[in-house]
Image 1 (spheres, rainbow, N blue to C red):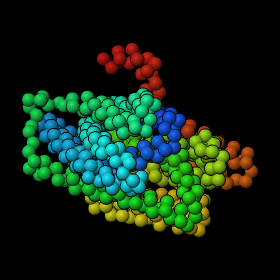
Image 2: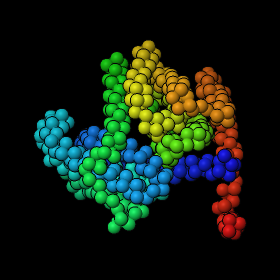
Image 3: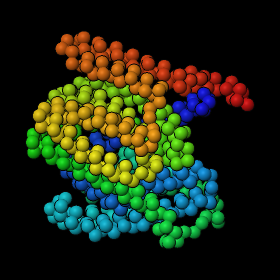
Image 4: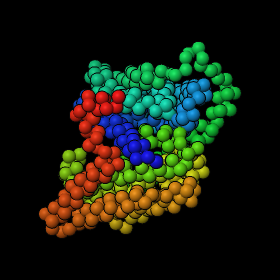
Amino acid sequence: MSPTKKTKNYRSIVSSTALFGSAQVINVVMNALKVKLVAWILHSTGMGIMSLLTNAANTIQQLALMGINISAVRNISQVNETGDERVLATTVRIVRSMVFFAAIAGLLLTLAFSPLMTRLSFESLDYLPFFLLLSVVVFINIMGTGELAVMQGLRRYKQLAFCSVVPSLGGLLISVPIYYVWGLKGIVPAMIVMALVYYLAIRFYSFRDRTPRSDRPRVTLQTIWTQGHEIIQFGMVMTIGVVLGAVTTYALTAFISSTGSVADVGFYQAGNAITTQYIGMLFTAMATDYYPKLSSIVKERMSEARRYVNQQTEIVLLIVTPLSMLMILSAPLLISIFLTEEFQTIQTMTRFMGFACIFKALCFPMDYIAYAKGDRNYIFWVEAIWGNVKTFTVISTFYLFLGIDGLGYGVLCSAVIDVVVCLVLTRLRYGFHLSTESFQLLIVMLSLAIVCFLASFIPHLWGSYLTMGLLTVGCFVYSLLQLDRRMDLWALLRRFTHREEYLEESV
C-alpha cells in the first residue's frame, strides 16, 4: 500500500470517529440537561413511568426487528461496493420492506401484550392506554431504525451524525415543554411526537436514492423472502446474542444483590457508568464507519481487510489508552463529579474497570471481522454463548471472594480472557494476526498503562499521583506523535490555516 493511501485510511478512521464522537458528546450533554428538567417536572414517579415505558418499547423493538437493522448494513455496504446501482436499489427496497413488516409486527405485539405489560409494570390496568399508544411509538421507531441501517450501509456519515443528535435535541426542545404542560399524561404523546420528528429527519436524508423513482425496481413477497432470508437468519443470531446479554446482565446483578446487597449492585452499575459506558460511546462512534467499510472489502479483498483491521486497532489503542490512563488517574474526581462522596468506596473498582477498557479496545476491531463476514456460528457460540457464560462466571466468582473490589478484578480478568480468545480464534478462523507495527504499538501503550495502573497502589499519595500524572501526560504526547506519523497532523493543520494555498496546490 502506498504511503499516501495509508495516510488517507488513517485519516478516514480518525475523521469518522471525530464526527460521530462529537455527536455522542452533544447527546450526553443534552440528555443530562433533559434528565435534570424531567426530574424537576415529573418527579420520581414520572421518571419511573417513563423508564418502564421506554424499556418495554425497546424490548419489543429488538424482538420485532430480529437484528435486521444490523445485518442489513453488511448486505447494503457489500452491494454498494460493487457500484451496481440497480442491484443496490433492489437491496435497499428489500430491506425497507422487511423493516416495514417488522414495524407492523412490533405494533401488533405491543397491542396484544399491552394488558400483560401493564399488569407486570404497575400491577393494575390503570396505565393500559399508555401501553396501547406505545404501539405507535414502536412502529415509528422501527421504521426509523431501518432507515438508519440504510444510511449506514450507504455510508452517508454526515447525515447520520446529524440524525443521531435529533433525539437528544428534540427531547430537550419538544418533550420537556409537553411534560411541563400535560404532566404525566404527556409522557406517551411526547414519545410519539419525538419518534415522528426523528423519523422525518431520517427519512429526509435516507430517501435521497440514487436511482430515479421511475427506474426503481418492484419487489414481490417472494423476492423479499428469497433474497432477504440471509439477512433474517444473521439478524436472528444477533438478536439471540442481545437477549442472552440482557439475561446475563440481569443474572449478574441478581447474584450481586442476593449474595451481597442492593447497594453493591448500585456500586457496580455506577462503576460501569463512568468507565465502560463512556468508552462504549467511542466504540459506537468508530463502528458507524468501520463496520460497513470492513463489510464491503472482507468478502473479496481479505488481505486489504486485514490491513484495515490493523489500522483500526492502532487508532483505537492510540485514542483509548491515554483516556484509560486518565480515568485511572482521576477516578476520585470522576466519582465526585458524576456521583456522590458515598461512591468513593469504588475507587479501586473504577481503576480496574478503566484499565480493562484497553483490552476491550483491542478486541473491538477483531470482533467485527465475524460480523462483516456474516459468520453466524462464530457469533452464536463465541460471542453469545461463551462470552456471556464467561462474563457471568468470572465476575461473580471474583465478587464472591473479594467483594466490591472483586467486581473490578473480574471485569479486568474477563477482558484479558477475551483478548486471548479473540487473538487465537481470529487467527485460526480468518488468518488474521496483528502486524509488527500494531504489536509494537500495543507493547508500548500497554506498558505505559500497566505502570500507571500499578502506580495507583503506591501508599504515598503525592508519589502515586505524580507518577500517574507524568505517565498519563507522556502517553498523550506519545499518542499525538504516533497519530502525526500516521496521518501527518501538521499537514491537516496547514490545510485549515492556509486553505487558499492548499486549494491552489491541489489545482
